[in-house]
Amino acid sequence: MSSGEQPEVPSPAVGRARLLPLYAAGFVTAFGAHSIAASLGGITGPEHVALLELGLLLAVYDGAEVLLKPVFGWLADRIGPRPVLLGGLLAFALASAAFVLAGASPAAVGLARFGQGAAAAAFSPAAGAMVARLTPQTGHGRAFGRYGAWKGLGYTLGPLLGGVLISVGGFTLLFTTLAVLAVVVAVWAAVAVPTLRALPRARQTVLDLVRRLTQPGFLRPTVALAATTAALSVGVGFLPVRGAVAGLGPVATGAVVSVLAAASALVQPWAGRARDSGRLPERAGMAGGLVLSAVGFTLAAALPGVVGLLGAALAVGVGVGAVTPLAFAALAASAPAERLGQTMGAAEVGRELGDAGGPLLVGAVAAVASLPLGLGGLAALLAAVGVTVAATAPSRDRG
Image (cartoon, rainbow, N blue to C red; front, side, top):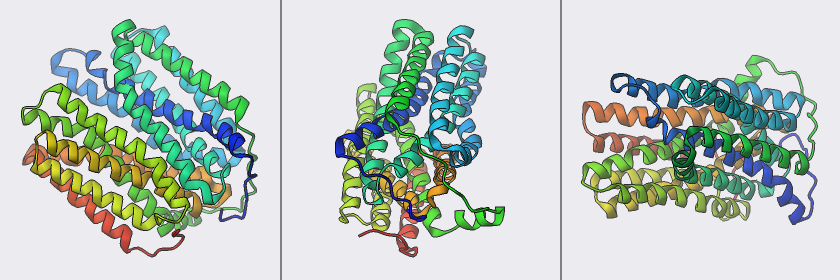
């Protein structure tokens, strides 16, 4: 790490044991967000206001994260990441339990999702900072690859298991499950994750912060993360639409989303291991993943049938999976150890903006032109970001 802090290196079994609750925290935020979002259409009001309500309910979770992640990242650096992690998980449980007590209504869902988003804004950057501090720099790729795979599992299982829970016991059962899950992970983390003290920090002015967050070591992986999150969001949201317009049924379009999510989750640990062994340089790997995602959306725009969309989903999923652990490892390597929480929080804001901006871009182009042009526009943007990442100075690259 840039400040010279070297984490204690335990036995492999002990090291995995204390990282697993952090990976599970990543699963909680991904599963919680997507299990609810996938079924919100069933709780909105009359037809003339349903789309507006749906849009607000979808946006409120991400909006809370964008506003609060930098704040909680700073707090994790100031008091140590462990209490922020545990407090965020317990707050997530309380927000979920509050919905159960209030009853199912759009207003209750909105308030609960804002509370969940605020809680995730606390434990998500804290978990990322702890993953970085509890592993040596030579193992960051592997650790963040596993962390990303657990989040990918949450994205994949969320809509499926969320739908099952709602069909059995309504939103009450889903939110009860989320509350119990968050408490279980909080207890697990309290038992297994060691206390990490807040590291001494030199005084930092606003100018110092701006200067650090505009360095290539921060901007390059953050922009790459934002671009791949946009690709993931558009892939999940618009590839099924592209298939449906071409006459594919829900089974085929569902398979497209499953292939994308599964490819991303499976590739991330491999990419992390390849980074750590020096076989996959960070800068080249991020650029290649972005270009591969661009190829995927180009395929989707040109070939709307099953073969084309499955190929597109595979390319986008592999591209996203390659970029994510490399980018997080690059962020951890470039950040002062005493400001890891702040760095991860700021980078997560970039991801949230990509999550919202990608669908907005494709939707806007599709509204005035066509969906294939919207997907093609995103492909061009991803390729441009990939070229830019490849062209920037290779400071702190591995391999």
